Amino acid sequence: MTGSARQALRPQHPSPRSLGGLAEAFGFDARGDVAGLEITGASLASGQVEPGDLYVGVPGRRVHGAAYAADAAEHGAVAVLTDPAGAELAAGSLAAAGYELPVLVTPDARAALGDVAAWIHRTGENPATLFAVTGTNGKTSVVYLLDALLRRLGVVSGLSSTAERRIGDEAVTSSLTTPEASELHALLARMREAGVRAVGVEVSAQALSRHRVDGLVFDVVGFTNLSHDHFDDYRDFDEYFRAKLELFQPERAKRGVVTVDSEWGRRLVDESRIPVTTLATEDAAGDADWRMTLVEESAHFTAFRLDGPGGRTLEARVPLLGRYMAANAALAIVMLVESGFDLGQIEHALGEHGTIDAYIPGRAERISGERGPVVYIDYGHTPDAFVQTLGAIRRTTEGRIVMLFGADGDRDTTKRAEMGAIAAREADVVVITDFHPRFEDPAAIRAQLIAGARAAVPGVELYEVADPRAAFRRALELAREGDAILYAGPGHEDYQEVAGQKIPYSAREDAKNALREAGWLA
Ligand SMILES: CC(=O)N[C@H]1[C@@H](OP(=O)(O)OP(=O)(O)OC[C@H]2O[C@@H](n3ccc(=O)[nH]c3=O)[C@H](O)[C@@H]2O)O[C@H](CO)[C@@H](O)[C@@H]1O[C@H](C)C(=O)N[C@@H](C)C(=O)N[C@H](CCC(=O)O)C(=O)O
Ligand SMILES: Nc1ncnc2c1ncn2[C@@H]1O[C@H](COP(=O)(O)OP(=O)(O)OP(=O)(O)O)[C@@H](O)[C@H]1O
Image: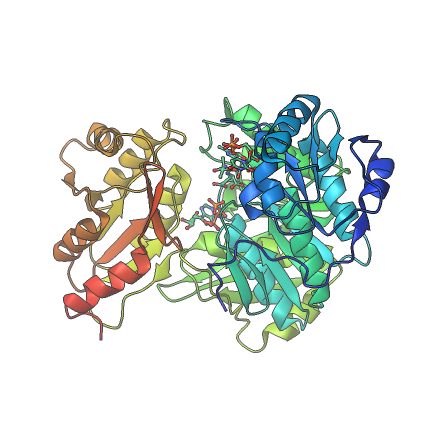
């Protein structure tokens, strides 16, 4: 069941906890009467408060959340947790609306939230094996590959990714890559109810910088890669790297697996303070404990070999495009080995052909049929993702590559020229469209992408079509049988964000419709 209506998965049978007990356990200054009150959850967003919640009011970029205390009370909040400035705002908001909720005060409510949520949901009791994955690209893919492998191994697993939070067949759509700590601990409590014994969590740099994974110590953490992204949140590569490095410390994880293809991976190994196992997936990567070697790359699958310490070896394949997916799968396998699975056990679970049967929504997802150009819908929105996907498509396509993409508004603007340049160099035809303009002028975003493309390849065959629906149809007109279309950006998403509005738009569905209109798909 895909439940886009619900926003979070919470325990169905929470055991209430005493508010006074919370204040005492954490040394919070309690203003108002806490006696006899009980809480069953926590929320950072007043609109998502459920009856019995502790509403946590934190300062944001726009406003201080405590100003919404009355709205939280309206939704059923039992009490408010906030900082001293927030306490004043909360008191004012509650009094104006006639509510008498107790307010708990602590110097930094966001920093307290992880441990508070762990205490409310008792996530430290009988925990599942916890895996976390970080890196610029590949996090979602590794989490899905871990899930597929665990299922094969007969382990009930759950996952938290950019695309969805999932327990077995139950899923809700995600809004953040890594949920806020209140949501993450509730999700883990729900997973425990469902008998989940292993969980893969995608951890963004922002999550580490904003306390979203506090209150957890992961059993095994994995690192994919680091490349240009998020320079709106982080000043430079060094600051971005330092945010990710935090995951590889004893406060957050017991052991790690690091892909050492780049200098960032090597640096992570040097600066991490937990036991680390290394994985190389590129020939030039140098020494590593484990090595992934590509065996075969086709439009339908990628086969690889994994060699580890003591002569251990495994041959496997993923029904997915690109050597980078083999690298993601290799990381997932080594993470499982580090958690205690034997490589032979994994090999046995995968069966004769060694297929890791993973479906990863919107990651180079092939939506075309038997006839016409091959169409991939991809979530790539970084220069390195473009390099990887275009490289894989080039190696598996006989004809031309038409690349269609736009760029995020109100996010890292410094990567746009490079994205344009890579598309111009690596594809044969480029179509520039709108992605999520948010509050930026969409024409100005397109102009930056076009300038980057033309600066790299002055004679590039390039078309500008603002509306993504029309742009896909233009790309389709430009492609023939044997060609490939890469539509990068939207991936699994089902909306386009324009000026604060989320307009329904599924690239996957619209592209399928366009293929039908063109007679390429039944
Ligand atoms: C830009 C940014 O980081 N925004 C985050 C932030 O919002 P904000 O600071 O703008 O919040 P605000 O609007 O000022 O409100 C302050 C507080 O009041 C609360 N509030 C506000 C209004 C109201 O009516 N009721 C209410 O309770 C808000 O929930 C918030 O807690 O606090 C919110 C609640 O905690 C987050 O959901 C929100 O993440 C937004 C959606 C976001 O896009 N974040 C990005 C940067 C992000 O985290 N990305 C990473 C990486 C993705 C990747 O790998 O590519 C991720 O993990 O998703
Ligand atoms: N190992 C990899 N190296 C480089 N690029 C990759 C790798 N894996 C995936 N990609 C590219 O990055 C895109 C996003 O993949 P994925 O969603 O797995 O990454 P992510 O780190 O979870 O990103 P996000 O947090 O933005 O979802 C893919 O669609 C593909 O274009």
